[in-house]
Image 1 (cartoon, helix red, strand yellow):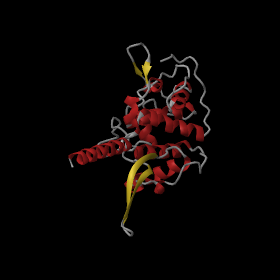
Image 2: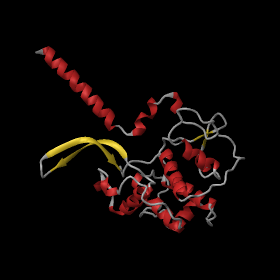
Image 3: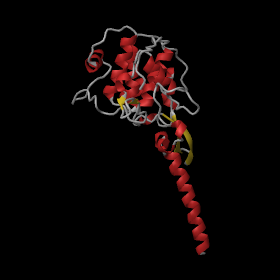
Image 4: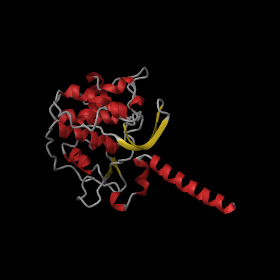
Length: 249
């Protein structure tokens, strides 16, 4: 009897371990990445195993230095991208302002003034909250406002699906639904595969599996923000003039 109980506990332990790993967000695996997947500097030569955001970072760095303001100096005399660090509302507005300036828009040197005047960054009762980290649904709204401000056409119909089809669409705030619809329709933001369970009340059936989720409350990392902006550059067919004299980080 004791042997049976021990075996049962082992099986339960394995099951819970697998379930725990399945529920972890993608960023949680960063600390277990192989050396080839380690963060890189934009000046590095391409190599096998480069991270998924490499093209976005390189294009936005050497393309008129769009993201230069967000690089952090390191002790080696270079600079770090800090790809897994959450991006703030103010930092995201800064990159958008730099992109607008790169395509010839007249912008204020103060990116927060620019963001407020254009309505891209709208405040709360306590102000613009530029130092608050940004969620995925907030990023979707800011990208929609930026598209309206830029007045550039984007190729539509390339997104995976409408936002209503995401497993967690009901969790998207009402004020963010237009942004989520726009970003998923044109392909600026895609969903993440996550384990979940759906309960059908009519049939009393609970189905568990891997679902495509928008994850509106999930914080946006720098790498994810750079990728979304790079997607915009590609879809709007913006030609960023290379700046070859940028110092290598």
